[in-house]
Image (cartoon, rainbow, N blue to C red):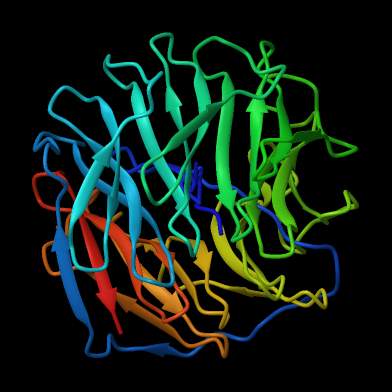
Length: 383
């Protein structure tokens, strides 16, 4: 699974929460498009919320605890930002124990440090860290705490360059992308033994902020991702474990700069959740089955809808902006019913609210909320 940049990185989905600037990542497979009717929308059902903060998390504006993913056992991975704006990875067990960790090469300056991104069934984590030059590098952390750091050959060594890790499957194969010295993105996959294979989608642009971005990966090794063309329009792709790449565009996606099709996650069945931005620069969600059928959706009354993750039952987690720029979370069942919710401690003004990110097989969701002081806290929502 991937976060939206995560991030997600499934942030990488990486999300600038306070500024409401969202960098979502993408992909969906080519196929037939099915425009769905307005989905049913449910009142929030009874659910259990557990709110938490990592020890050492700062309490200033934009600081705090940022969960990004959850596995079947209920183990959560994420990042916390301390009072000096340095980033640290953390893992939270199903019993609530939170353990912070650092990659050896991580910088200790402002906006540097270690990011936790995605976790698989065995508790192995993939993520990235920013060094003292603010260049990014990948790492894999086992459940016992052993961290292996790596950098894809060809990665740039400057700020906003380097290796970015986005997804990991139960075999320990990771997906991601690297940014070279010219600011161009290229996809990669890394086996559990450390073998790295790079790839580029035909049609990807070769300018700064263009190229190929690998994101989610499922059990079969199929990767979802996005490529950005020379006109800065986004398009989806799927890459099989054998290397075959299929590209696509969602009908309704805009064709201008910063518009197009993105994806955030892929499940075991090959079903993908993602987003597209239309010609009016409005974001909508979609889900694509492995058969090629795509159903689009938006939360009723939302200014923008962002689908982030998908579990093996086809339930999607995500968030949306209201007309007053408050953020609220949602889950969407495989039948199309959308349930909206907010964490108990979340603020209700512009720039505050609840984000839903990772979802596991049992439908348990993790994410974060901004309180009225714009401090970020983590939560766990059990249906």
